Amino acid sequence: MNASAPRTAEQFDDAAQQRDAATLGMWAFLATEVLFFGVLFAAYTVCRVLWPDAFASASRHTDLTLGGIETGVLLTSSFTVALAIRDVQLGGRRLAVFLLCSTAALGVAFLVIHGLEYYDDYKAAVIPGIRYEEVGGLASQQRLFFFLYYVTTAFHGLHVAIGVALLLVMAVRTRQGDFCPESHTSLEVTALYWHLVDIVWIFVFPLYYQVGRA
Amino acid sequence: MNERPPSLFAHIVALITLGVLLLASIVVSRIHLGTWNSFAGPAIAAVKASIVLFFFMKLRKSGPSVHFAACFGFAWLAIMIVLTLSDFLTRWPVIVR
Image (tube, rainbow over all chains, first blue to last red; front, side, top):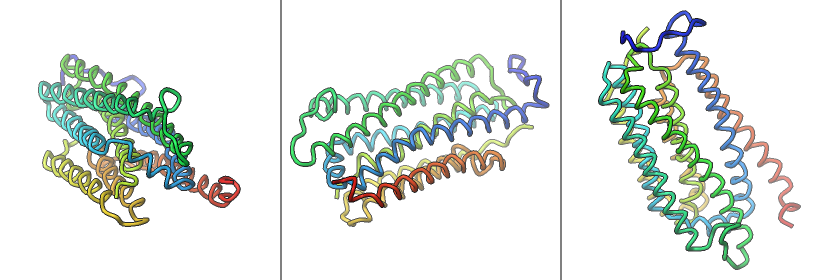
């Protein structure tokens, strides 16, 4: 075992028990995150059932190509962080650091692409409260779509930014030799958080980008 | 106890499957399926999420307590959406008036 690797906390019998407790705690936290985004998805479902035409019309303002690229970027980032943990489990360090930095870079790429989308939305004047110039019979219901879109994607973006920061911290700690095959709990729970961020986007993509495209 | 590392092959197959499903969801969204268009995208998303949960998040190798916590998150979400929709749909004519 690496001499600099963290010791098991005194309340646990061994590293496996500590890892199981941390993993269960993280899953409980992720359940609350599911409910956090779930409220927004529930609001979306209600509004879309009530005003399907307005939501289909508003959804066509989103950029399907950029949304698809963002989805691909996040799916790839889930793959790279999973490989980073695998490398640590196999006793590696340099490849794991590279994979963690790659995952963080993919997260930054996601944020940049989404920033470009926001800029295009600003130019198209579809941001309620800032610049909104949609007119017509469906304009007020479309405003609801865009309001939900920005709240959901902004909170998701915040989660991505937090995830990027956590991944960089994990990369530094991996480089310092804080983790070993027997003990890498912090890395595992950070990866769980990152995967959940990915799962949220997996549902955002069809609900906000793919409606009314046929 | 040291956990056995997952197979690289399984991770690569999972990523390729996710990519194929992403392309499938984009193609399906472009095909006119009527009401089914509303369900196809979320259904494909559910399959993609399951792959991330079971392969990348290792839910299939986790213990019963983790299964319990994961199921409760999604079960509460399902209850919230079903009860909210049942309320709104039964009062639908009043709300849109």
